[in-house]
Image (cartoon, rainbow, N blue to C red; front, side):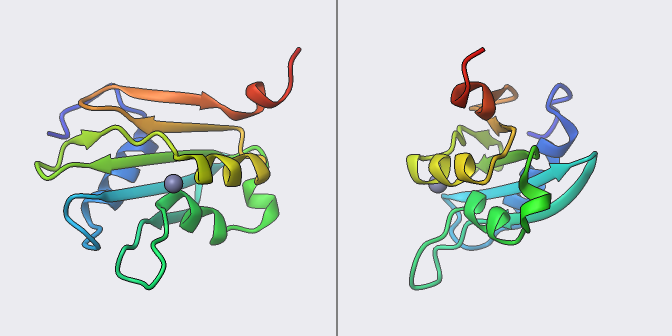
Length: 126
Ligand SMILES: [Zn+2]
């Protein structure tokens, strides 16, 4: 299950956050905000509260502006079998990520691969 050696180390941290998330077994997300080579904030989705909150939003809200600018956000989802699942940010999270000036988002795919969204590249053309 977690024998995916090629995953970036902070994506593995996000997977661990997702695994420890007991909000809802079928939809466990974890997010880790990394800047300057260190973890700034950690987030997870919550479906227990009156309003559901996505892991990405949780991690962004826990950070201040200087932690956000140019940071990388690692997002993971794990399935019922505890293995990684597709965790590309939804439209609402993408908008929040753009507004926060995150540099890139690294997210789990089904299995041991991952995707990268270069946020700034999609904002500015060269
Ligand atoms: Zn979302």
